[in-house]
Length: 253
Length: 272
Figure 1: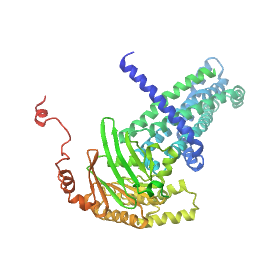
Figure 2: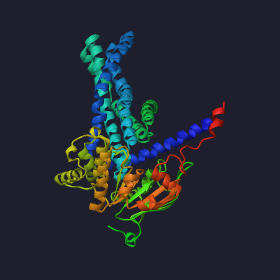
Figure 3: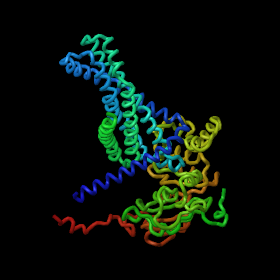
Figure 4: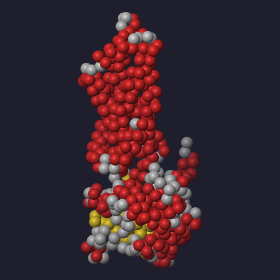
């Protein structure tokens, strides 16, 4: 390994350590920050409710595309009636958690990182420290919990809207009998499929929120630094989501 | 709440032989500053001498590599986070930028430290905040957001926030920078009246010679990482050393060089 590569690997390990230490610090402040629940509720609203439109629109289109593609594929084997099953399992186990997390990183993650980064650049975080208020407790922890709580809820909504989209294509357009579509779906989707989706979305919730608050909190206090932190949030989150998804899928199957 | 050390006449803030460097850049080396209780102490020096860094050292935000800083007789470097936070509740800091929390109104900004540290009933809190805003002349601006304030107003709100917990010491970071003459006069009068009326010990970091001369009881002039002169404003004015004269008279070149260290001008121009 060349010196440069070794340096890069070393740097990554150091950063991983720093992120872990930051996570521990945030987790320690989670309970104290809940003493002021309004802060956390506000952040669940910011990360969750404000992402609803993009999540529902994306869910609808993903469900519809899935409907068209799966219908075309299944029709070749004469098993169009399994469309509901194919779409629901695909959405609940895979597409729902992953796409919601990717959209979340782009919509809420960037907002978190740039907000915290700008608070740092304008001395607001230092001002809190000087007023003996821990910014990790007051600013970071509520945003972290907000993302963690919002992610599984958004995923569930994405899944439901997605299945509705598939139903639009399958039942309304392709004339699959509604009873067949829904009964097959209900019979095939097991609790463990839903559990897999929920676990994934919880893990992505921790990952995405952590990346966003870490990058924001540690952003250089300049315009360029905040911009870089925002970009890094999206890039790191996306890679992290896909990597974790692979690991979890391999474990679950 | 005076500690035994204070009663024995030790200064409220004592910076002793402090060395602080960022990487290879030495900011302070052998810095000594003593702040007496009850007075207005000014720390002056050219830009970039680390005046703001000195405030950060006093507040325990950064730690010195050598030397000792005591505030109320407590060694700042040895304090754990809860003790440090307890100390910070007794010390107010006015930021150069104001550093108001942009997501809250002026009223909420001033109420913020109280809400975090004291469980006051809402009517009492309201009275307290309005009283502090009245003191800085901005009671009428209570419902405005920080983005709607001018620079001078922001600083006055920040001042109200800094005094809302009734601190024993107030640190001012460049309180006059970027203000019009009227706002400057207002801040000047406020600092003086807070010091006299509330007996708050004040530490001002600034490079505005006329303003400092008007209100400071004792002045330190810092340059090159250490104190180069100290005394009352009158003593400083009559100080004949070159560095003091350059600073007081505002001459562009002198012991504090106009040019940033650079290679020879002609050699550099002829280089290809």
